[in-house]
Length: 369
Length: 247
Ligand SMILES: Cc1ncc(C[n+]2csc(CCOP(=O)(O)OP(=O)(O)O)c2C)c(N)n1
Ligand code: SF4
Image (cartoon, rainbow over all chains, first blue to last red; front, side, top):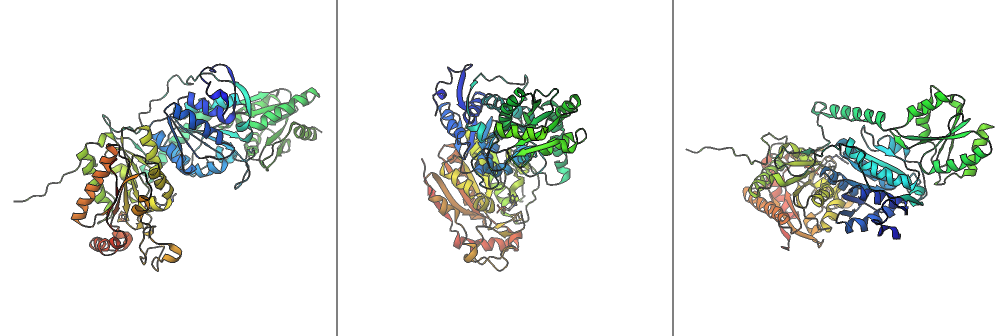
């Protein structure tokens, strides 16, 4: 483990070096994560290893669970008990957790989940991928629900977004994902390790938590509603009213040199970093290319994308993903009324590779002719 | 002149249950309620309910309850107990829940020596889904998914949970009881109390396996179901204490 861990208190506010997988762990610990449960899987394991030491040192809860299924159900229990709780995994492990995530969403409990996405389907490989986009943006498990999904493209964002994830989870009472990948998780770069400060002035009280019913009516955490009249309809309507509110309040994206661009690349996570490098080269050569980077993929920053088109009617779009094309469906849905269908291009790969700035430049030149 | 006075433990809600006539879950609810009252732990307890006929325990118990996913109550209970070590956490499971889909969770909670009290209701079938074969279904027993009777070949023999758990060194108290007669019901109550006290006294993982009637799943009358335990189940699932370590 890197030196920086033990020096962490002296490094608060200073630039430090950590892997993405370690930065999320340190951010969680600083944000007051009481309990962490997980099962090893590459390329995520450093997070579990980091927690295994720090949580024990801090006298907090760490369990290496017997499976991802057990881990997510421990998250369910700890969250219901009122704790701030997190788990992390990579694609196959996240698939196993889906039943539990559905229960957590249905019970309106907060938790933070990290998916360091790797190649799939099946065992796939341990290389970076973005092929879990559908899974994370459409709920993932059974039933009607959503998870807020934040997508970092730097170690600073891994750290900052993890802190934010705890607050968003508690504030909206729902699971919040950090969608990382094999590059972001394994990458080391300097970042500022600032102290945690809550993003909401008034965090709601956890008066629903299971603490024993002394002095109050019993609290029940459940997802079973035997008949429609028992409240399932109301639950789903309440959830979707909440989701609508979040879609209005918490979309986030970054736009770089989109004004007057002939082509706008749409990419998130590691891919957006590589695209940025390509855009720098292209701009130098006089090509007007911009970047639209979603920082949340649910809620999807569709209105921002549409607004962008209003200001720039001549731009073509190139969606780049480390998948066979998943986010592109959201792009097409957002742009179907404002951009010609054949002006939306795709560049993707499904082998656990990542694009290079050179291959991106080639693709851009192809599109721009 | 004699009269029957209805007494209701405070920890049990004043509601009629959905359990079928002669069902063992009703007896278990009453026993747990009495023990909770006697130990005065209602306001300090958190119950993890399984998926199975007892899923609606949150409606019947007058305490904090979480309804868990099928088989996962031991993982949920583990986390709750770790978060609130000073509270009493009760894990209640059926045989499909504990010995099939949730085998990993119960074994590993036991192996970690979690300070939990587990009530394991073994009724040899999946009651809630209509009487399918469970890991505890007897050889020869007909169920909706073993219409010709269970055979060892291809279906395996019934799993003896207490015997299996006894091999795990961190388990502290394991007993198998039954509720097919008054005498056995009283013994079961004593076992439940011991399992609860073990947790309260910090002794560690305790599990009481209770042979319980599912007349509907067995296609028997309530009386016949009691007889079935006496004449068939106890032979294969001997009653008794499988482990009792008081430290
Ligand atoms: C993941 C999952 N698989 C299957 C089911 C369906 N199911 C509900 S209850 C049950 C069996 C319960 O049997 P048991 O644990 O023996 O409890 P009993 O009803 O007999 O008390 C099953 C298979 C489910 N709810 N969830
Ligand atoms: S099906 Fe069996 S276990 Fe379920 S309530 Fe009826 S008798 Fe009880």
